[in-house]
Amino acid sequence: MELENKTRGCSVDAKRSYDDACGAAHALDLIGERWGLLVLRELMLGPRRFSDLKKDLPGISANVLTQRLAELEERGLVRKRLLPPPASVQVYEATEWGLEAEPIMQALGRWAARSPRHDPTLPISATSILLSLRTMIDQQAASSMAGKVGFRFGKDTYVGVLGGGNIVISRGDPSGADVVFTGTPASLGAVVYGGAPLSSIEVEGDHDMARRFVALFSLPPKVELAPPRN
Amino acid sequence: MELENKTRGCSVDAKRSYDDACGAAHALDLIGERWGLLVLRELMLGPRRFSDLKKDLPGISANVLTQRLAELEERGLVRKRLLPPPASVQVYEATEWGLEAEPIMQALGRWAARSPRHDPTLPISATSILLSLRTMIDQQAASSMAGKVGFRFGKDTYVGVLGGGNIVISRGDPSGADVVFTGTPASLGAVVYGGAPLSSIEVEGDHDMARRFVALFSLPPKVELAPPRN
DNA sequence: CCGTATCCAATAAGATACTG
DNA sequence: CAGTATCTTATTGGATACGG
Image 1 (spheres, rainbow over the protein chains, first blue to last red):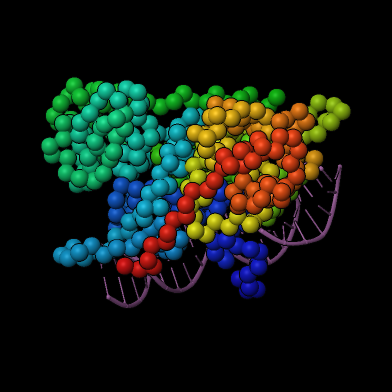
Image 2 (cartoon, rainbow over the protein chains, first blue to last red; image 1 turned 120 degrees about the vertical axis):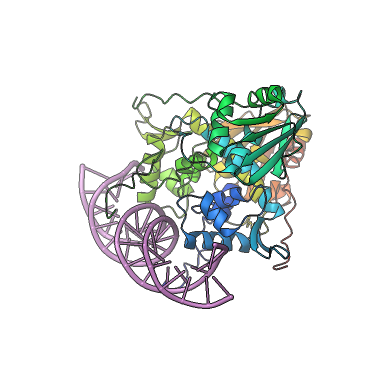
């Protein structure tokens, strides 16, 4: 910057900080730059490779992704890891503390679901739609359900374990699940949130459970935008 | 494309959008630009004037504040209002939906409180510290308390009503509260979170209640930063 | 392929001065 | 007080080239 630092007390780094003791402000210093939170979101269900992150964050450029990952790593939210041979590829994974950011994403998602401008037809990643299930599940209705639900998006597969009104989702082999959904993240979203018929996605296994499962999710009512001026 | 628009489906405006159906991403389209969430934070306890917002957001420049307020208004989160005569001044207030963003700030604050780099000695606004009380109150311990707590920060005064394990805070006249704290936002923070003695802030009224009140709040343990490399 | 690094154009943010 | 206007600096995104 030509002329040194601003010398304003910066808590996180010498860059742009809010200089505010408020916890929310500090959180934004940590994950508030553009793409920061979404990069972390993509790591919530397990380690990913650079190119997978890039693919699932449409619009991010490689240099920005590199920089965000480096910052998140430096701040202790993300870790670089080398998978053991024979894979020997480098992956990025969220740290324990990084994973603890999930309630932030849930609060954001729950709030934005009421937005009149939310467009559910935009692209959505597998991680996003699966995290949203954890956010939007009707705990009351789900408390009477238990079992394993599998998801196949191409070769990325996940398993959700229903129990206690919640669903815990992680990467895993869906064979052996009570019901398995195969399709795209968008087609799953259309079924659970958009009222699309179950027949619009491939379902294997217990169809009755599939029906009850997709009924566990719904979106809150949209806000009515106030009159433009008073 | 030289100029023109990207023509990529943008849900919020023609500007930089994440183009992602994920709710969290949409939320960031709405309140994720720099200062956006903090401007909204300052409105959570009632309407404020432009210059008050500027004063409590140290570092924001007038043009950015103008632009953020205009965007938040256009998105339905903030409303401009003219106070009735004789005041006749213009204030900004959060809409109902804007107020519903409080859980986002709570999730951010709760998460960031564990940050090893959080610096509680930075400046803090009255709104921030009071919102943090709502976030960090020990509901278990608070469930056995009831009453009114007043706060005086210069001429800005607030009243918190304890009950049901929660505290509901709003602007109001603190006279008549069971106990009234007078000082700065920072000095209140030092007492409730920093273990500073009650004598470091002015307390009127029921001192025993004051002692029990400040004991309701505490910060979660810091994360231990993992070894820098594996 | 998997990432990084570099260059460049477009934007957003910051500082400051200014006006009704 | 409540913003605008203007100018400067910083960050972003896109393209592309480079090293393993």
